[in-house]
Length: 459
Image 1: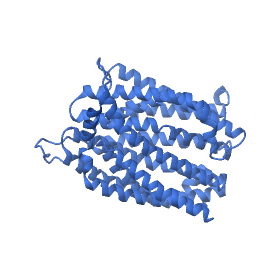
Image 2: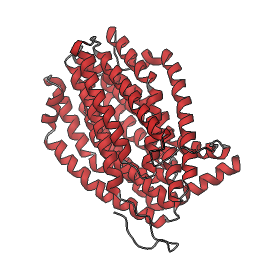
Image 3: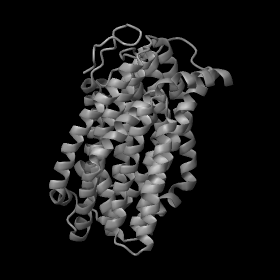
Image 4: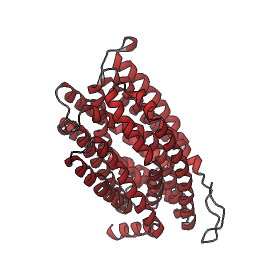
């Protein structure tokens, strides 16, 4: 999928295939999203409150994952650059440093969650036993977060080096275990104790642990493309460079997750039906998000490796080509979602009130699909180049002017929840326009070198 025109320095461009990078990533993330949807389907028979508890805990857990996401963003950029520069030793040092930081962050969350679990899930209006159960659900997920952090970092590193298949194979095993265990533990099947809602949490945690153990065994036995080498990995310059990339990515995700949580809180004011519909709608949206994320990660890898090989024009060509392909695919998804909104919604919920909300939200999700392709593809290109500040600024502007302000106006004007749902469209319009403008400026092509120079000056 890459052009073979000579690059600016006369060397042949790297041969990188979009679909070999994006395809496995999309498949792996799609399987993960299907697991989340399967968990909702399994828990749904326990009642709407049980579903609300799972949705609330999952939302908070994903928000807490912003620390891991920011680390893996730095991992992707630095490993891809090192791999493009034919420097596997540096890629190994980055991997080990990222794993160490992720381990410390995960252990800190395990301590913090003891004090904040119930207040956090409580912001969605849960009360009584279901509040306590949602808090315990969240605690279980966080306890297993050390395993999740390790598999997230090593998966990011492998994709950045061009191996997108191995993470899919390994995680797919964990996904199968997750679904089977969720059914067994929630309902007490095959002689197992019946844990109800908590069974889904235990199933997810055990699957994370299993995948982490498999990854560790493969990595330590040097069966992965990234091999552990006997060398020191810590340096102040490397830490500072990783942090310079990771912190803006973390800020971006903070804006995103705070806005999502705030948005869900406003929706919860309209009642359990509207809140449950939005929670299910977000999980339906995640099916298209994983496709966008596949293009994002693939573009990050391609841009990072091309810049590491000193081929900035090839990096730009790859980004625009990937955007055209992603736009076409997500346009098809939009048509499928919009024309089958009621059928899709009725698969997850039987309540007529919730279904009406869900159908409207699914149609709005369909409308934003083409704009999502712009955010994911060009956002991935900027992050792969080491420019994580621009995506953070774009996210902040889109949220403040697209979601927060419009949501507040609609709510205080006494408009229906359908108007609140529609704020999603304004958010994506703003972000897609800004991404196109900033990417065309081209400052991202020198972001990595500027970051490395700044890190060296501070070390």
